Length: 149
Length: 176
Image 1 (cartoon, rainbow over the protein chains, first blue to last red):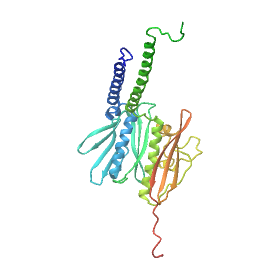
Image 2 (cartoon, chains in turn brown, red; image 1 turned 90 degrees about the vertical axis):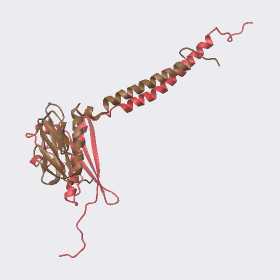
Image 3 (cartoon, each protein chain N blue to C red; image 1 turned 45 degrees about the horizontal axis):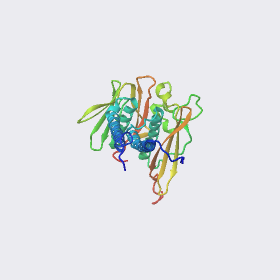
């Protein structure tokens, strides 16, 4: 069998495959570094901020046994006695907990607040209206679970 | 004697083999593109739901959480099945607001248009339906549907939740 040279040679073929795989790897690294860091996603759009806030609030209410809600402030108490503060100040939704630095979860809000209904104990709703017209408001609710599902 | 079809010009066979090798190379390169595409697809961020789909999911969450809270307060509570109902009072006022969206913000009909116009308008397109199914083993499955229209097409988001059977007061013992 004679050895071929030029574009049809096995060396060129292997080189092309190698370059493709190298390109795929570089693309993968670029994509992951660009999109999979939640911290970079969070501040980029409002829905990302909403998602993060809802996830965090869901985690807090899962452990909470009682709460105290005002129009713009919410205090969640866990069975172990720790409390988590949520509040709307300076057009942002903030969360603070003893021993942890305060977090800003959603910014650029026109108004927002918490509401409860006397007929539904251990349950509260949160709503937010963005400052920018045309952006989606948020409304959802949480029930306290006290560490249970 | 002349023989037809057997004469070859110099290099003709070599060109044929080169073409074959090129095709073979193209095939292999195409195969090599499959992992390239897969890697690209996997490394893409998950597709972000539309704003309306996200809102619908949050509304379904509201209903599920309310049911959980009500059953925690009253173990005999079981949500009834409902047809599609608006989540805010419609402008024409003909249809009642879903029971899961009443009594919000201190109003019988929930979110009030004059008090919170932005929130009202964002929730106006959504309708809520609740299905309750009895399952073997005494538990119930609650399915909350939030329906809406987007780009002229009807869409629906649903969340499910298993609930234990409502507990009723014991019937044993002395009657008064």
